[in-house]
Amino acid sequence: MSLCKTRLQEERKQWRKDHPFGFYAKPNKAPDGSLDLTQWTAGIPGRPGTLWADASFPITITFPEEYPSKPPKVKFPSGFYHPNVYPSGTVCLSILNEEQDWRPAITLKQIVMGVQELLDSPNPDSPAQEPAWKAYSKDRVTYEKKVREQAKRYATG
Amino acid sequence: MANLHINANLPLYIPLHHELVREFETADSNHLLVLQEVQNAIDDVSAQGKAYIDFVLSDDNRAPVQVNQDTLNTLLTALRQHIVSKYELECWKQSAHQARARIRNQQRNEPELTVETMDLYREYGEKRQFADEIIHDYQDDKELKQQERTMDQVVNTYDTYVQLRNLVYILQDPSNPLPTDADNEDDVAVAGGKISLRDPLSLDYYEEPVISRKCMHVFSRATIHQYLAGSSGRLGKNCPVDGCEATISFNDLKPDLIMALRMKVLRKRGREQRNIERI
Ligand SMILES: [Zn+2]
Image 1 (spheres, rainbow over the protein chains, first blue to last red):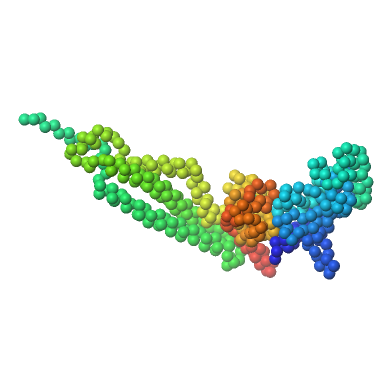
Image 2: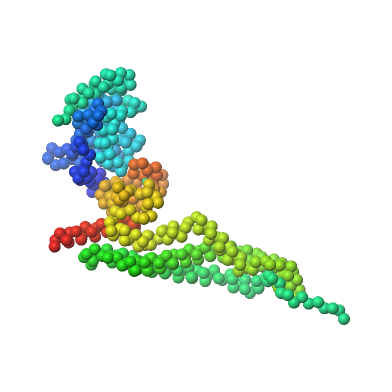
């Protein structure tokens, strides 16, 4: 069995056994009803006490064949409002970049927690979209308003 | 009548006789025989140690085995003594080699001891005899070597010794950290004081664990080989473990016999568990 497949089965087992509070993650179903371990859907809760609180933001995680040598790709819905998210929804995060901090030992749990951390702590040095980045650096009032509006759309409970 | 004065005092230093020099030259081959004997003894005790570990972990023992501490101590003491002997013989070999070269040189320049040369040697005074020289060299060399590596470090390079020494801890719990691990905690995958028994690449239990000499991270042989297969030979790749700065290549990997022992204990426990459930 390929390393990619073994690893993804273990990731699934371990996620089901134990995962951080408020998060969910599951492999997608293929058209024939079987599980596609290379495509996952997950939800990232905003941290309590931040602009992102009381909402769960959906992401898709796509694992390449070379996983875990290469990192998975993480995407929010397209048009997601965040300085480090490309217009396509792709997340720009150093631990998800093979040339930067990706290491094969980084687990799914570490990835989703890294994305949660990124929500309220954007990296001003790697702008990925114009609107959120500009507002974040020059007009914090507008930025916060937009983030709160978006959080309402993904509100939980 | 001339007053014949005869000095009856023997000189304090006497040159080595030519015949003896030749004998001294052949001492080297004897030494190799002894070294071989010691190596055989190490191999024998190691084999006994391995057999004991296999016995403890075999399926003939349905129930968890009580390790016989006396047997274990006997094996450990014997193994350690032989390893120390080998180490000392190697130091000896090195210094004897140097001493031989020096004595050969010295002897070439010294006239043989006769009545005529006696006075010459009397003037030498209390020069060190050749045997003292060798012992002196040997002690110097040994001291220097021990500054590089302590005797504990030397015995810990013998896998069977390390396995035997830690058998009790690992039998208690295969993910127990070992007493020596406390000294270099940063180098060991410790989760809540426990050693992870899972390969960081597959997240599955270790299979044929190998350890990186550079950073002491442990992997399953197949998964790390697959990871490194994409790298260009000697250059290697980043260690797969996040936060580790090491670059590793195939040459940096060697079997991790301690992790292998942990896995054996884990599997035996699994079988025992199933037996109990069946009953
Ligand atoms: Zn490492």
